[in-house]
Amino acid sequence: MKKLPLIIMFGVLILNSCGSTSTPFPTVTVMPQPTMMAIENPTETSTPDPTPVPSDGKPSVELLNLSVTPYAKVWGLKTQQVIDRLVQVEIQGIDGKNYQVIVDPGAIANELWANTPLLINEKGVWETTTLKSISQLSGIEIGTGVSQGDNNDGTDLYNANLSKQFDSFYISDDVNEQYWHYGGVDKFVNLAIKNNLPIRFTGVFFHGDTYDKEKFGTGVENVKKYWDYRFRKILPYIKDNHDKIKMSITFVDEPFFAYNGQILWIGSYVESGDLKPYKAYYDAYGKNWIIEAYVDFYNLAVNEFGIVPGKDFEVVGITNVGLELPGLLHDYTAKEIVRMKKEIGKRLNISWEQVPFDIGEEWQIGDNIPKEGVWRVASYLPDKINKDVVRESILDMANKTQSSIYIIGMDSYSKDNDLDSLSRAFSAICQGAIESGVVPSISLFKGMNFSSHNDPWPTETIFNSPDFSPSKLYYSLLKGLFEQ
Image (cartoon, rainbow, N blue to C red; front, side):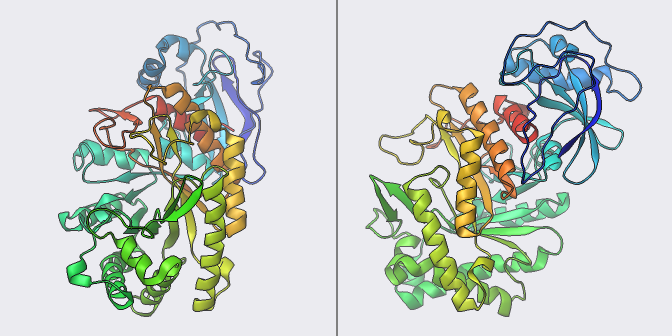
C-alpha cells in the first residue's frame, strides 16, 4: 500500500519508512510541523500538548475511547496519553482505494506498540480497526482455524467476531474422519456462505486420523478405495459451493518431520496403537503415496465432479511444521515438492510449474515445549525470528518449488508467559510474509479459542475470555499487518 501526502497529526509521528519491492507498503510523507524521529534512533519524545481530537471528519470522543482503552489496558498505558499522541495518515491500499488510518506512534520508536493502527475510515465512517480491515490494505488475507471444540462455538458472539475479524477460516478437526459425523463441516460451510467468507478444508489427509482396517483393509487396492471414499465426502461441498464462496483444501497435513538429524516420513515406522492412515498409505506406495493420491483426486474432481483444482478451488499440497526457517526439513521439503510436482505434471500432462500444489507453513513459535524431546517447537524461539529471516526463508521455498506459500496455523507457546517476545515475532512474521509477495494468506491455529492452557499443545490466544477482548498478540498482528 502507498501512503499519500496528506497527513493530520495529533502528536509526533514515528513510522518505519522501509518498503517492499514486491508488495508496495507505506512510506509516510509528513507535513513539516512536528518533529519526526527516525525509527533507527529511539529517543524519547516530549509529550505534546493535549489536542481536541474530535472535529468535522474526525472520530467522536466516544469512539476514540472505545478504540484506545482496551489497547492501552493490555500494554499498561494511559488512554488519554495515547489519544494525545495519535497520528492520522492517509493511505492508498493495494486495492487502489484511499483510507484514513489513526495510528499510535508510541512515545519512543522501538516500543512494541509503536505504529499500531487503532481506527480506520474508508467510506466516510470511522471504525475501530480489526484484523480484517487492516489486512485489506496490503491485500493479504488474515484467517483462523475453527472447530466445534472452540469455546463459545456457535454463539452469536463467536459468529459475529469471526466474520468481523477474519477474511477467511479453515475447518480443522471437523474434517477428520473421526469427527465428521458431528456435523461441523455442514455447519461451518453454511456459516461461510452466510458471511461470504472463503473457507478451507484441512486436511483431506491427517496423520492422526482414524483408519478403519476392518472396513477398508490394507494394500494398494484397499487404500485406493479409502482415498476414493474420502474424496467423495469432500468434493461435493466444493462442487456445490465454489461459485458462491472461495474454497480451498489442504491435501496432506504433516507427512514428514526432522528428528535427531534425519527425515522421517510419518507411516514409515511402526506406530503404537491402532493402525494410522499414513502407515497404510506408506506400506502401499512408499514415498510416492502423495503423488498417487493427488493424481486420483485431481482426475476424480475433473472427470466426475466437473471442477478443476487450481481453477475452481485452491490446493495446498502439504502443510508442515519445520519448513519455516532454513534447515534440514526446509531443504528436504523443497526437493520433495519439486519431485512430486514433476511426477504429477507428467501424469496429468501439464508442466510441473503449473501443478496446483502450494505449500502451507505452520510457524509454531515459542519456548513452551509440552513434553520432553518433542520436535515441534524447540527450534522456533522468538529471538530467531525477524522479518528479514521470514521473508528470505519464504522466498527460498517459493522460488525452489514454484509454489505460493500459505501460513496456515500460526501458533505460539510460552511457558514463561513471555508475550512481549511472542508479540515481536508475530509482527515480524506478518511483515516478512507481506514483503515476500508470495503469501496469499496468514491463518492462525486457534484464533477463536480461549482454552490456551488446558490441552497438550497450550497456545497463547489473541482474544481474552469470555468477551473476545483483544490481547497483546492481537495488537501485534495489527501492527505487523500495517507496519512496513
